[in-house]
Length: 364
Image 1 (cartoon, rainbow, N blue to C red):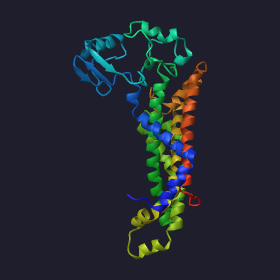
Image 2 (spheres, rainbow, N blue to C red; image 1 turned 180 degrees about the vertical axis):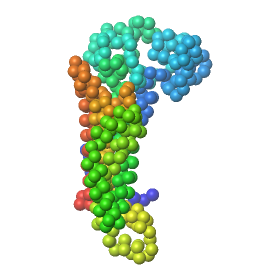
Image 3 (cartoon, rainbow, N blue to C red; image 1 turned 45 degrees about the horizontal axis):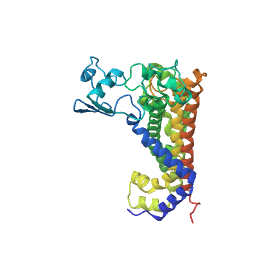
Image 4 (cartoon, rainbow, N blue to C red; image 1 turned 180 degrees about the horizontal axis):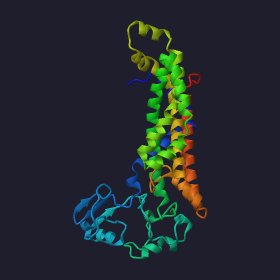
């Protein structure tokens, strides 16, 4: 499919902003990698060959009776299970042998423990001399970024928390953009009383304190991914209304629009086939910043304790742990660094998108 000249110019402008172009690809790579979090950091092997049978523990929950035990759930980190598997086959483990909910009960120090590279070799290897099959130090069993106050691996929770934050932000951004674009298009195209009444409604709606409403709802309904998404969607859709409304107000009286009306073309066809492409130019430039705001909102709610359910991997929850455990600075510093890098990448990528759609910029 051939690319039009204007899209080639936009793509060239996007690439010319090297900082934004590189930031975009770094962010995309991080998102793609964390989508496969279970294959990177997990307390279950990816593949097990046991007594000639291939098993997939990361996909299927096998009872411990499968390996000669008696429990309903297999604890693959148990030295007994690991020895049983090694004597009757082999196992392929993820790079890091911790899930976001794995509690390490054999820590050399009371939780929260510092990163492994800040502890001595003796401390890092001491727990593997307590019955594990491998008496040496296994990289995947080390806490590269330390543990939180419940003994859970910080790196594993970062990987899973990054994925949840991005997926939540993307979902909220897409849904709020769709609602905001439709509302702004109706306002700008029809104008008159439709525009006037809608503007008064938006003024009243945006004056409602969304945080207080969220606190009230969370006291009645247990917060979850979808509950938070719906509540935040009720207030986030207004972000693009003004931009789309202005574009439709400007373009609704253009000659080609009047000609389309004269030919009997329906209003909604004119709106979404003829006027929408012009409005999308201004809209797309705001999307990376809306995504960053959505991620920040979820992080703030998790930090305050009104976000995702307790135990969920969350960047905001990690920051809260850093605040509550000042003796463990790696918790707060790690959470701050990840959030800062994520938002910086989004801002830089948003600047490149803005340059790409700026008609005043040309390439040589």
